[in-house]
Length: 190
Image (cartoon, rainbow, N blue to C red):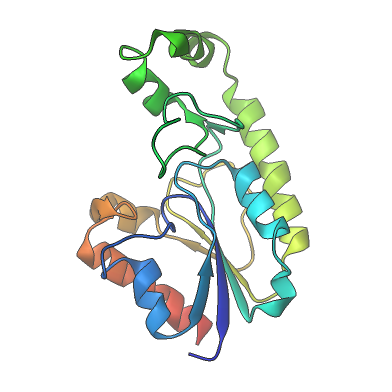
Protein backbone atom coordinates (compact mmCIF):
# COMPACT_ATOMS: atom_id res chain seq x y z
CA UNK A 1 0.00 0.00 0.00
CA UNK A 2 3.01 2.29 -0.05
CA UNK A 3 2.99 2.61 -3.87
CA UNK A 4 1.10 5.60 -5.24
CA UNK A 5 -1.14 5.37 -8.30
CA UNK A 6 -2.76 8.15 -10.31
CA UNK A 7 -5.87 7.15 -12.26
CA UNK A 8 -7.11 9.43 -15.03
CA UNK A 9 -9.96 8.71 -17.39
CA UNK A 10 -13.67 8.52 -18.01
CA UNK A 11 -16.59 6.61 -16.48
CA UNK A 12 -14.85 3.26 -16.91
CA UNK A 13 -12.41 4.39 -14.20
CA UNK A 14 -14.44 6.92 -12.20
CA UNK A 15 -15.05 6.77 -8.48
CA UNK A 16 -17.93 4.51 -7.55
CA UNK A 17 -19.83 3.67 -4.36
CA UNK A 18 -19.87 -0.09 -4.98
CA UNK A 19 -17.09 -1.83 -3.08
CA UNK A 20 -16.58 -4.29 -5.96
CA UNK A 21 -15.69 -1.50 -8.44
CA UNK A 22 -12.20 -2.17 -9.80
CA UNK A 23 -11.28 1.40 -8.82
CA UNK A 24 -12.09 0.51 -5.20
CA UNK A 25 -10.49 -2.94 -5.29
CA UNK A 26 -7.18 -1.44 -6.43
CA UNK A 27 -7.13 0.62 -3.21
CA UNK A 28 -6.42 -2.63 -1.35
CA UNK A 29 -2.97 -2.72 -2.94
CA UNK A 30 -2.05 0.92 -3.61
CA UNK A 31 -2.59 4.48 -2.44
CA UNK A 32 -4.86 5.85 -5.18
CA UNK A 33 -5.57 9.34 -6.46
CA UNK A 34 -8.43 9.14 -8.97
CA UNK A 35 -9.21 12.14 -11.19
CA UNK A 36 -11.51 10.29 -13.58
CA UNK A 37 -14.71 12.02 -14.65
CA UNK A 38 -17.81 10.41 -16.09
CA UNK A 39 -18.47 11.31 -19.71
CA UNK A 40 -15.26 13.19 -20.36
CA UNK A 41 -13.49 13.48 -23.69
CA UNK A 42 -9.89 12.42 -24.36
CA UNK A 43 -8.96 16.11 -24.23
CA UNK A 44 -10.27 16.34 -20.65
CA UNK A 45 -8.30 13.19 -19.78
CA UNK A 46 -5.23 14.94 -21.20
CA UNK A 47 -6.01 17.93 -18.95
CA UNK A 48 -6.36 15.61 -15.91
CA UNK A 49 -2.81 14.38 -16.55
CA UNK A 50 -1.50 17.93 -16.97
CA UNK A 51 -3.03 18.92 -13.62
CA UNK A 52 -0.65 16.59 -11.75
CA UNK A 53 3.06 16.16 -11.28
CA UNK A 54 2.90 12.59 -12.54
CA UNK A 55 6.51 11.94 -11.51
CA UNK A 56 5.36 11.87 -7.87
CA UNK A 57 3.41 8.66 -8.59
CA UNK A 58 4.81 5.16 -8.87
CA UNK A 59 2.26 4.24 -11.56
CA UNK A 60 -0.20 6.06 -13.77
CA UNK A 61 -3.31 4.33 -15.14
CA UNK A 62 -5.12 6.07 -17.97
CA UNK A 63 -8.54 4.83 -19.02
CA UNK A 64 -9.05 6.12 -22.54
CA UNK A 65 -12.42 7.08 -23.98
CA UNK A 66 -14.28 7.06 -27.26
CA UNK A 67 -12.95 9.19 -30.14
CA UNK A 68 -16.56 10.14 -30.89
CA UNK A 69 -17.01 12.16 -27.72
CA UNK A 70 -16.98 15.91 -28.44
CA UNK A 71 -15.24 18.18 -25.99
CA UNK A 72 -17.35 20.91 -24.44
CA UNK A 73 -16.81 23.23 -21.51
CA UNK A 74 -20.43 22.94 -20.41
CA UNK A 75 -22.96 20.25 -21.18
CA UNK A 76 -26.54 21.62 -21.06
CA UNK A 77 -27.95 18.09 -20.86
CA UNK A 78 -26.42 17.44 -17.44
CA UNK A 79 -25.98 20.95 -16.04
CA UNK A 80 -27.77 20.00 -12.78
CA UNK A 81 -26.25 16.54 -12.43
CA UNK A 82 -23.11 16.63 -10.26
CA UNK A 83 -21.87 13.28 -11.65
CA UNK A 84 -22.13 14.30 -15.31
CA UNK A 85 -22.03 18.12 -15.25
CA UNK A 86 -18.52 18.13 -16.75
CA UNK A 87 -19.29 15.48 -19.35
CA UNK A 88 -18.77 16.01 -23.06
CA UNK A 89 -21.17 15.29 -25.92
CA UNK A 90 -21.62 11.84 -27.39
CA UNK A 91 -24.28 11.06 -29.97
CA UNK A 92 -26.20 8.42 -28.01
CA UNK A 93 -26.60 10.74 -25.01
CA UNK A 94 -27.55 13.76 -27.15
CA UNK A 95 -30.12 11.73 -29.12
CA UNK A 96 -31.62 10.25 -25.94
CA UNK A 97 -32.17 13.66 -24.33
CA UNK A 98 -33.21 15.66 -27.43
CA UNK A 99 -36.92 15.02 -26.90
CA UNK A 100 -36.73 16.42 -23.35
CA UNK A 101 -34.59 19.43 -24.22
CA UNK A 102 -35.30 21.11 -27.57
CA UNK A 103 -32.24 23.35 -27.11
CA UNK A 104 -30.03 20.39 -27.97
CA UNK A 105 -31.86 19.44 -31.19
CA UNK A 106 -29.19 21.26 -33.26
CA UNK A 107 -26.60 18.91 -31.73
CA UNK A 108 -28.52 15.88 -33.00
CA UNK A 109 -28.54 17.51 -36.42
CA UNK A 110 -24.79 18.14 -36.21
CA UNK A 111 -24.03 14.53 -35.27
CA UNK A 112 -26.33 13.10 -37.95
CA UNK A 113 -25.36 15.40 -40.85
CA UNK A 114 -21.93 16.88 -40.23
CA UNK A 115 -19.90 14.89 -37.73
CA UNK A 116 -16.84 13.38 -39.45
CA UNK A 117 -15.71 10.06 -37.94
CA UNK A 118 -12.33 10.13 -39.71
CA UNK A 119 -11.60 13.60 -38.37
CA UNK A 120 -12.65 12.56 -34.85
CA UNK A 121 -10.30 9.56 -34.97
CA UNK A 122 -7.46 11.71 -36.32
CA UNK A 123 -7.79 14.29 -33.53
CA UNK A 124 -8.18 11.53 -30.94
CA UNK A 125 -4.95 9.91 -32.14
CA UNK A 126 -3.10 13.23 -31.89
CA UNK A 127 -4.22 13.60 -28.25
CA UNK A 128 -3.24 9.98 -27.52
CA UNK A 129 0.25 10.61 -28.89
CA UNK A 130 0.55 13.78 -26.78
CA UNK A 131 -0.50 11.80 -23.72
CA UNK A 132 2.15 9.20 -24.50
CA UNK A 133 4.83 11.94 -24.62
CA UNK A 134 3.72 13.23 -21.20
CA UNK A 135 3.67 9.92 -19.42
CA UNK A 136 6.61 7.99 -18.05
CA UNK A 137 7.37 4.35 -18.73
CA UNK A 138 5.36 3.27 -15.67
CA UNK A 139 2.05 4.20 -17.31
CA UNK A 140 -0.62 1.63 -18.03
CA UNK A 141 -3.04 2.59 -20.80
CA UNK A 142 -6.40 0.83 -20.74
CA UNK A 143 -9.33 0.85 -23.12
CA UNK A 144 -12.76 -0.72 -22.90
CA UNK A 145 -14.38 0.16 -26.22
CA UNK A 146 -13.41 -1.05 -29.69
CA UNK A 147 -9.93 0.32 -30.42
CA UNK A 148 -9.87 0.05 -34.21
CA UNK A 149 -7.88 2.75 -36.10
CA UNK A 150 -6.60 4.22 -32.83
CA UNK A 151 -3.08 4.67 -31.50
CA UNK A 152 -1.91 1.57 -29.65
CA UNK A 153 0.38 2.14 -26.68
CA UNK A 154 3.24 -0.23 -25.90
CA UNK A 155 1.78 -0.77 -22.42
CA UNK A 156 -1.88 -1.11 -23.43
CA UNK A 157 -4.55 -3.36 -21.93
CA UNK A 158 -7.63 -3.80 -24.10
CA UNK A 159 -10.70 -4.77 -22.04
CA UNK A 160 -13.22 -4.61 -24.91
CA UNK A 161 -13.99 -8.35 -24.74
CA UNK A 162 -14.49 -8.11 -20.97
CA UNK A 163 -16.82 -5.16 -21.48
CA UNK A 164 -18.85 -7.00 -24.11
CA UNK A 165 -19.16 -10.10 -21.88
CA UNK A 166 -19.64 -8.47 -18.46
CA UNK A 167 -21.64 -5.27 -18.85
CA UNK A 168 -23.03 -3.79 -15.67
CA UNK A 169 -23.75 -0.62 -13.73
CA UNK A 170 -20.43 -0.20 -11.89
CA UNK A 171 -17.79 1.37 -14.15
CA UNK A 172 -19.89 -0.26 -16.92
CA UNK A 173 -19.06 -3.76 -15.62
CA UNK A 174 -20.80 -6.40 -13.53
CA UNK A 175 -19.08 -7.85 -10.45
CA UNK A 176 -17.09 -10.43 -12.44
CA UNK A 177 -16.02 -7.86 -15.03
CA UNK A 178 -14.74 -5.49 -12.33
CA UNK A 179 -12.81 -8.36 -10.76
CA UNK A 180 -11.21 -9.29 -14.10
CA UNK A 181 -10.16 -5.67 -14.74
CA UNK A 182 -8.78 -5.32 -11.21
CA UNK A 183 -6.85 -8.60 -11.28
CA UNK A 184 -5.39 -7.90 -14.73
CA UNK A 185 -4.22 -4.41 -13.70
CA UNK A 186 -2.86 -5.63 -10.35
CA UNK A 187 -0.90 -8.40 -12.07
CA UNK A 188 0.52 -5.94 -14.60
CA UNK A 189 1.63 -3.52 -11.86
CA UNK A 190 3.11 -6.07 -9.45
